[in-house]
Length: 151
Image (tube, rainbow, N blue to C red):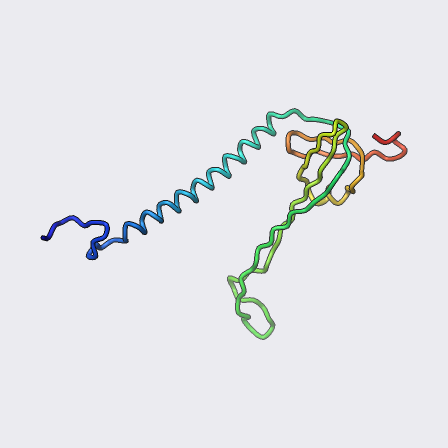
């Protein structure tokens, strides 16, 4: 019996198999959902920071950490004997994110992201005045021994 309709498992079907289409659609949906989730989380954190008051508190640096992300480069064939890489090849690269954990006089701890320059000027045990807005680091002024007694 010959019909004009094709079933999902009909061998003479001209398009891709239904199972492939379903899996492709599922993976595509998951990727889009993941992307939307990251964007929504980022926007909600930004809005929360915008709504937060600018706080100025006495605090101590209790720990420092870095988060290094490495990206491997693509290896290209040398163009000549000098070892110069071919067009389209990239060098490996990395980026570093810097975090410092502060402890306020109340005992509350807060980890804030900052620039490498600010990070390099702090050491564990430093005491001083911290300014932040939500999770945004705004500044830290170290207290020197001549400024008065420790916190």
